[in-house]
Length: 573
Image (cartoon, rainbow, N blue to C red; front, side, top):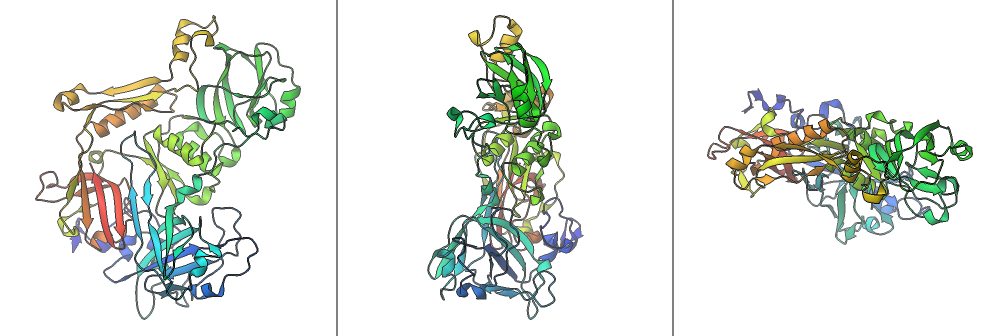
């Protein structure tokens, strides 16, 4: 059988197949390793002792192929002596010469193939996190050998890695021929009797941790007792008119960021600029410095500033986090801020494989509460990006692109489909206008919140929460009477040009009538035996009996749903 003019086994699908983490280069293109031979599923469950010092693994787990767990990404306090429980659906053991898993057994205890469902967010007024529903692992436990997983041994929060490869006899295929198709987390303890259910969640749940530290209220940089338990501010990128936190009323000492700060561009009292008086190296030096009235000094290394006279309403323009351990300021783009959130308060090591294809304009994020995941969501929402984890557990982010502006990586032909394409909808009406807000202020000021010396132009500026970049096409509303005025997206960009570029992009995407189809793929067709097609990839769907699809319509992979080898793609475009 030929596909797109080339033998199936030789097709280069780099644009739609992600690289495989932890395996050899030979297995980086799953389509080449997947044939019509039977497959075997492997699952590795990282089980941890329910309490410290509980001793070795129960004897009942020893036949389940436990081995010392390598150093996990999270949580950091796991020891290297915790076991991995290895199971499969057909039974598998590494041959003595297997370079990755010699003599390593995976007991035949998976009652059914795993299931995954992944969806890419489309419209800017919806959640920007990749939706990944992993379902659960169902394990055979008629002999009670797995009872310890639901009792003394907890799997909650542990990594669950799923692999798929060829099932061969009498010699098993080497582990290098297996594709790692998911790196997930157990959502809770296993439950059941003769069958155990292990609920699964995407790795992004690791970011449900506070993004801001807490003031202890013990004085100094920990603030007075009235601040005890309150969140410290965190500033990323460039933000205007934010209110620093007063941490020492006697010294008139304020904090802009919990950590090293890149730059204070301006400091104002009721809109009147104060004069910069220089920077000092430490909190102690700033505490003992002499600061004249009408001026301020900074301690950028600690994110602090001090003024010389009691202010009425202090606001600042500043460039934020400059922690060298998380990459320094690094242009303040949304992608660099995402990396800093993950590596800093998120606690995700740089080796986790983060990849963010987001706009490069200077961006701003001012945080006083919430989780790292919520901060990532706010960051992605402001650039019309999406974020989340891949099935391999790698953090990633991107932007939706118009399918008609891309060359499809693959055409889904009729012979590859198990049923005719099914159109779903209705979708939203086309947009005739797209708006993007920029230079969003930390706070607005008007009336007596501004001093009398503030000019009328400045009053207008400080009284607006943001400015707007607009992209419009009235011909759209003329062609489509129900065309919408798209909702305004409030971005964190500082420059009008960056916001305008995003507004133009939104109008290109949503000014055209879009359609959505479900494509149920025949098992093994085109290598789609597991949902490893990258969300956001551009494919063409051809079905001669449908006018919209007769010539092969370019469409974006918006969703992938699969159980075992049965795969359905949701295509948008």
